[in-house]
Length: 227
Image 1: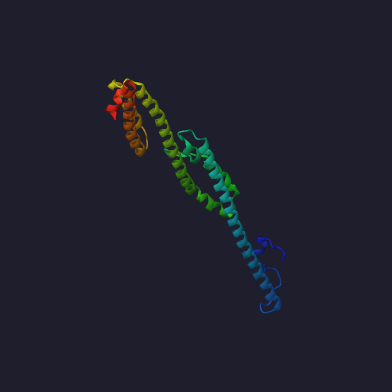
Image 2: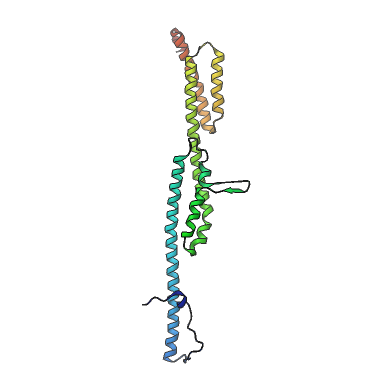
């Protein structure tokens, strides 16, 4: 069957200024049937176009998800050790009513023109839901990166402090207490309360062991007393 343009197929037969045929005549019935067929063709075309648009929108949406995932991966890889700015760079920020867009906005907005027109409004309405989900992911990544950073920095500081105790005069109580308190002050600034409590417990134990090592190093005979 030949293809009938949609704008033509949607039009009813124009009955003005043409010869009219009795409804019951063969010619009249044929003309009415032809008009009904045109309408049916138009409806099938509309449904087919709607289905194609929905399919294309699904493909484009999946491509967008892939682009976002890749952008998040690169943002995490390129973020500083403490994760600073990771979330805002990807998903932007809103402060005092002012919205600063992120890479997500650039990716999403560049996808809008690719969407079929019939699906575009629905697609645009999904933007903030996608931002919210992605924002939660990146906030979690930034938080985890920060916790790892704090733990790594504390481990370095602790190693240096314990070495200082081990090399110090074990009878210099003031020096020992100063180092110990310095460690507690450092730990108090850690953001994760669970990690902070664990670090405090370990610090008490580790400083006591370091002091014992210093005592033994100064007077090996005291090893028996410390057992």
